Amino acid sequence: MAPSYTDALKGEYKVVVPPAAQFEDARAFVLDKLRDDLGAGARVRLSSSPVARDLLLDLAFNPIQPPQDEGFEEAWVAFVDPSPRAKWGHRARYYFIAPDFSRVSEVTAEFPPQPRTESGVPFVFIELN
Image 1 (cartoon, rainbow, N blue to C red):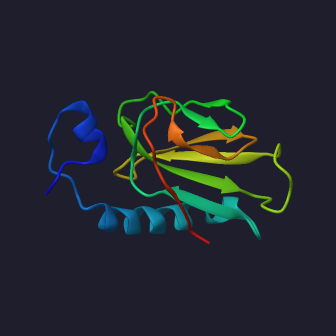
Image 2 (cartoon, one colour):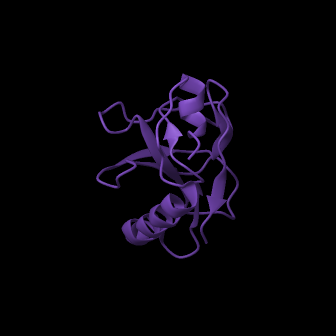
């Protein structure tokens, strides 16, 4: 198998689980774990693969700091907008999920994410609902 995008950037080679299989597991985990937090009409997006630990920026260029704990070197990133019809500047949440789904860290924010990390590494969010 080919290295993941982040491994290639670091000049390392690791055998990785195919992202499609991982994504389906992550999707199921997010929808099950966050069911109570979603509420009626909430919009949920999930990164298409785990994102290397790097500062994320929202659309207003505010920093969204990922957890610095061990086990979060890479994390799935879920973004929940509880009021998708409201204008931005309202409460929303980012969830950083350890790749093995053992831990979740929540960050409150007021804007959706930029499509790349602070250092320029792109990532894609996929809408789950």
